Length: 474
Image (cartoon, rainbow, N blue to C red; front, side):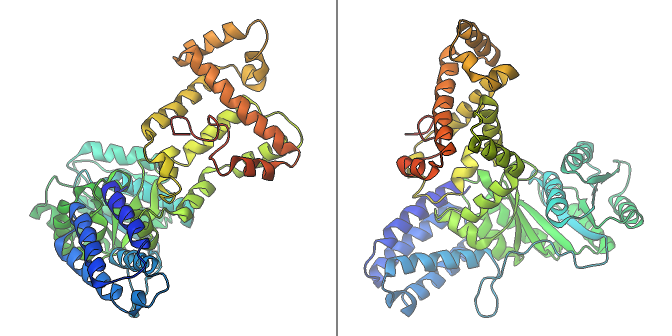
């Protein structure tokens, strides 16, 4: 996510925590750093000024000065104001809980998606459909009103099927208004809970686009009008947001490509410019890579504090509980941990978004060793391991001893290496890592799990090269 902003602010947080006394002088120095970090991250100047003024007022007030640990109290002020900038606050200044889609209406609830071409609108429609199906148990229909790009209609058809929703056909010869009305009628007659309407995007804002989407809004009377904006646009996102705000009564914002944002200013700026809450954040290209936006948790990520809640949620979604229980029972009963189980563990990790996704949600102080690691290399190592395991026969995965002793082990390894496109050394390295993991699993059988954890000393995940992931420092 917002790497440059996160790096700068997380370094500043460490400095602030070390302050024994808060004075106007050191507050000014710290706020200068915060201001520079925000401006470099393309946060709009009025937003920066307002943010700095609020932090300064609270930093020099009794809230921090009277604290037993003023450095930590100041970090708390920055965190709270960062969350307030991105989220919604009530009359008492308290942050409101995250806002999901409002479906309190006579079905079908219509969601109108607005935004420029390339912002990720069509993919977001599918992600949102998946979210509503899995989290809200709704029956969802999608339709494309983008008659200017036939490929957009086909794209929506494809991703809608992948999301498990239903798609209403449209064609370039039709008018967007007629498409929308036909889809709404179909949704009513077939008892859909939600209709998501994907609208046409442009490479730039023009009056024809705004007139068309205003007409669709008047016809459909949507319960939600969501503005989809690319978080990587930086300052351009602010100009786009202002134009759509003037044209439509926006009810929410969806920030896309937040995982690739090197600046991070859009989340703060767009919220302030539109006045509409950020409802969702696109955190990966996968269809389940859409999170309900939690301003407090996102502020924690930006400050390098991680997001343990999101990590737990991801684990709950990605881990096959039944499969995990079977493995636990197998190990407990003395059944051998084999290469099929090893392959399954890699698959579980991939479901959770891979190494970089998991690392992003951990506090920076816990991932300090990994900061200098080549995450791309680590991901490649994991894919190589998966390729080697898949190049084995089912019998070899079930009986790893075939690859470790016996006359045929050398020829088997040569065949596996050729099948996976790797060197024999890579196969041997994987088998060594598996051997380490198998040894740990044997210790679990006798109730020695706690002893094993103490010996590991929190050194990482077992089996990945002596307590860590492949490609990462040890």
